[in-house]
Length: 306
Image (cartoon, rainbow, N blue to C red):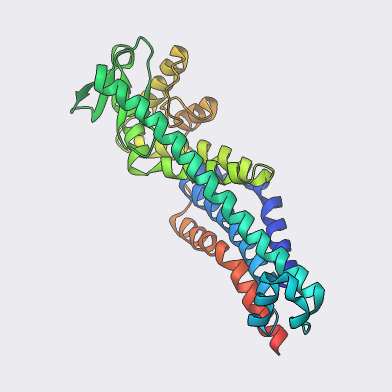
């Protein structure tokens, strides 16, 4: 019964993903939307684990069942459960092993790729970069206007000499605030997690959509943080300048990243933020999503016992 309940729960999450992506409130509270997407993704992974565990452990004589699952050739010694129980247990164990292996492999590959990109950028920085303490960034010579966070888990910001020439002081200050918001918010970790899940489960549409949405939302959130200390119009002008320059940094956390049209619309016509109590309540509910599969398994267990 637990497997059925968890499957229904996952189905609801999968169906709700596209609706969440198109929800109007997301633009008003990108930070909250980021949390919701991450909690939904975590809930799906936990659901897979719970389904696998309950397939192995939901019979009364757990020890005997585990032994029969691992000793297929000695099934006759554990005939109380029968072949059907054994087959389900083996299937559950296989789900757990495969899921864990895919997540570990994807995490290793994504982290290795990020670190490789980061090493290449740091080599360039050491060779031709110059530190600008006033900006809190490293300047690289380039005719294109660009600013980005060094990939690979580092919180170093890079800005090109072309950006220094083409952006006004206010625009440059806004761009730096945007990039430092990425760094202080550790947005690279959120992106890495989303990429890892998509790579581990490429056939799950929700994880592909989650990666796209996380990339979109970290840019919106960084814009919101930046305009606390810089004029929205200055950041909007900087976005246009950098988009015209067509600079593409090696990091996905570039100042000109995301949907430029949506970002410009929000900067020129800022949406009304969601009320604080509503944001806190929604965040609390979202944080509970990964716990739901566990609660379903526990509730089903108690109902079965009684």
